[in-house]
Amino acid sequence: MLKNLQVYSQDSTINKRAAHKLISLLKKEFNLSISFLSISFINSVELREINKEYLNHDYETDVITFNYSKKKQEIDGEILISFEEAKRNAEKYYVSYGKELNRLVIHGMLHLLNFNDNNKENKKIMKRMENKLLLSYNFTLFAGK
Image 1 (spheres, rainbow, N blue to C red):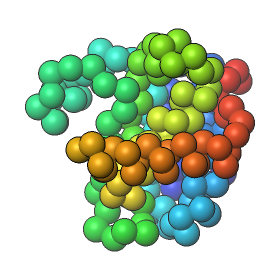
Image 2: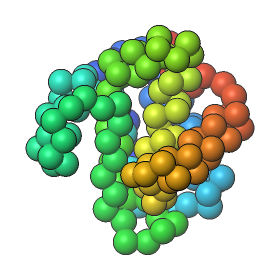
Image 3: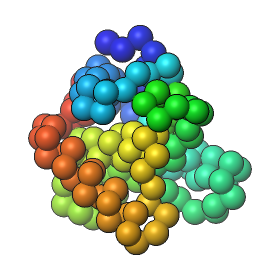
């Protein structure tokens, strides 16, 4: 277990130990240090309110990341994930709920590593990296307790 990682979930089916395992793998993959990381799986209403209040975006989203680090290889941040949006995405893209949660955690970590999806080209680069990592860790970490 990573001592500088906190995982909070409103969905009791999410395996917090598995989240630690995924972050440990990503930490090793990118040679990172983690001064602090919080991952919260919350409902879509709460995430939309955060999106509105802190980012001035009045719409639902599946993941929001706050990066507090000044150093590239040191993680200090928060990843907020809507488990309800994750379930909708899983149905929409015909993937398991667990795999979709993996993707969103990876997506959040990539943002903390300064990957961006603010335009078409950056989105393509980020998506390629996301897919590579999902294939590398081809297992579902979050389904069930």
